[in-house]
Image (cartoon, rainbow, N blue to C red; front, top):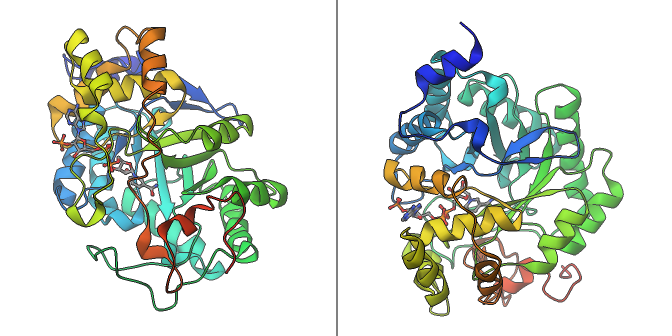
Length: 348
Ligand SMILES: NC(=O)c1ccc[n+]([C@@H]2O[C@H](COP(=O)([O-])OP(=O)(O)OC[C@H]3O[C@@H](n4cnc5c(N)ncnc54)[C@H](OP(=O)(O)O)[C@@H]3O)[C@@H](O)[C@H]2O)c1
């Protein structure tokens, strides 16, 4: 039986042929699907539900899965991936990303943490391994925004590079094909690009119509990194603790709603179409089959018009939703200190 026949056997009738899904080419020449499934269940989806969504999403044509140790579900996702491959999807067809959590930045912890993710995910290698946050500061799951790590530190580039060197070793060991960053800023990336032996292949960052980060987006692309877009729909169901009164709602924006009505699709699908056409890789999360299927279909159906793209470019509100307050390192700081908004790394 050849690969394509096995694939057909697993594919759902109403699904999308993965070969029709656009892709991004990384600096190594590897191809990453232009859309993936997010797997952060947060408060609303259990590890079982997320793992079931991974299996269902593979069945309808997803090949990229955005995982992380801190999501607490890699072991169950690993069972889904094993089932997916047992059904005939080759490992090489999949793209699995995982992330090093903030409490594993110490040199001696990095390789064991990656090995643990590999064991949990039942894989021999990861396609992409990211440093989840540039700070070693962490917190227990479900804490509110006022919680702080008593040992919290500012960004210390020498320490970040020690962690990065271990990621480079993972590439040399063949455990990881690409390494990358997440929640970075231009000044931090500039220093990493200067000092890295193996350059980052991707940067995962918050991107949705109300938070387009044009400068960082262009910086990432112009330095041969793929921008991976988290919370691409504006994370409409995130917990109350992750909301502030200033937050805006992408899927209620009149421009997004107007396009959705004209096309007869959900506003969420408009956000996904826009993301892929703009050039980022969105990783929307849903455990509902109709939703994750609609998101995948959105990227293989007729593109948005140039006028739609321009209209959406005009609704950027610079509205960051994942502010990261729990990672602040001293009293009296504002969440903007995490994001180097003045163009230089915030001093310790
Ligand atoms: N690197 C990082 O630091 C970082 C940070 C945050 C997130 N992430 C990654 O990004 C992924 C996505 O982010 P996110 O979960 O915050 O936000 P998101 O994908 O923007 O929003 C997810 C929400 O959108 C709804 N949704 C999805 N598709 C829909 C559709 N077609 N129609 C209607 N509603 C739809 C889902 O509700 P239903 O459940 O009702 O479908 C879900 O609650 C995460 O799962 C995680 O993998 C990474």
